[in-house]
Length: 561
Image 1 (cartoon, helix red, strand yellow):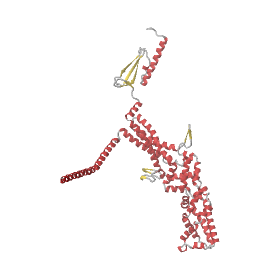
Image 2: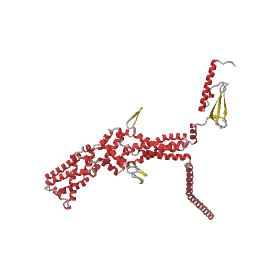
Image 3: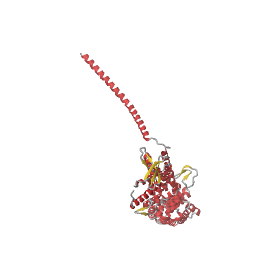
Image 4: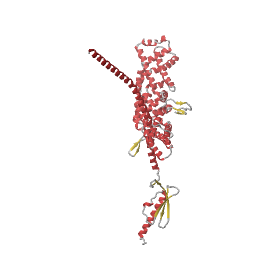
């Protein structure tokens, strides 16, 4: 054999090194790549099957030195002897999907439904039921979940939520003293002045016999005009001074927290109405986002089910979908609190971006339904915490007024009578302050005041307007969604494993259609039978008439002949 050149020896050496390296790689990864390289003729591969398993194949590489290296790989052979690799996880997933495509395509659809239902249920659980529903066992105050029952979060926690809202209003939106300072005492006095004589007559009717009730009016009518003017002046002065005293001491005469909270507790749907009015778009988003959040998570759930051969993946995935949709929706509504720029996008919570719109809705509802003049005066006159202070102010001014009037009439009432008259006047005062409501509502203009102040709130302050209704039991809402999602996944698991079998709806509808068709044909035949009988009778009658007429004609012809 002719000696090889240096280049040929070098090429052979490099080829041997590459072949040996590739062989080692194929030995570890099970991929036979050595055959892809050109190897000189004096080196060759030998392949033989393992006797232990038809899927195991051994490969030997014989080098120029006569050394043998053996590698083992897994192979499959079909009936025709064609060789291929075992199916990997992707191949198995594709095979599973092709075997039952409807089952797997149903997973994201069911997840979308579960997401929507769980979020819808979460919204309903916030506001309903207004009263506890269930068996009243182990119920704690202001805790919506009992051992066997539930009460809406807002109705259950009306008091702490209302108190938090009032604190926000009084600290950031409204000063009661500044609001009452807008009232004009002279205007108030002119509106209340005609009511004082009516009030005096009612008090006199309770203090004196019926026969003497008309005496004060008769005495007043018989007075000269100058005396009447003096009494009228005393009346206006009394009402003017009383109004100024109320404005000065309003903080001790009116407790806005009690006024609002008492209304909310008395009608536990009122706070829910306010929250719905302000956050209806967010509540709708919370419900509807479950549909597409659930669908997206369902796609992930489908992929996991294809690659993870465990039926519990559906149940666990359903629980994750129910939990994640509620959590994501709540986060999307209120976070981020402040505008956050990410590239060309500016992100902020859905609710926070509607600050002006919500300010308008909140101020309108609060001013027209909660802090009206009627509700404010009712609280001033009936709140146990403030009525003692109000009674003291009213009695002082009322008794001074009565003393001035009776002194001018040369009458000196006893102190006990004055105290009793003042007490009677206080009890009857609610029937006479209605003349102020229109003026007070218009002058205070709380709707505009609240709107302007709320629009000027920072994002962090504004976030506290609606977020507390979700924060109170946010974990409960999320876990409820997870439980419902797990239950839906459990049903899917039963369908997957065959434990639950759905009826063949096509066959059911087919049977129903056949039954309806047979029943309809039977009814049709029943309707047709009388008609056929009538037509047959008519036909037979016509035949008889025809035969009779023909016979009579024949008889006539015979007679003529």
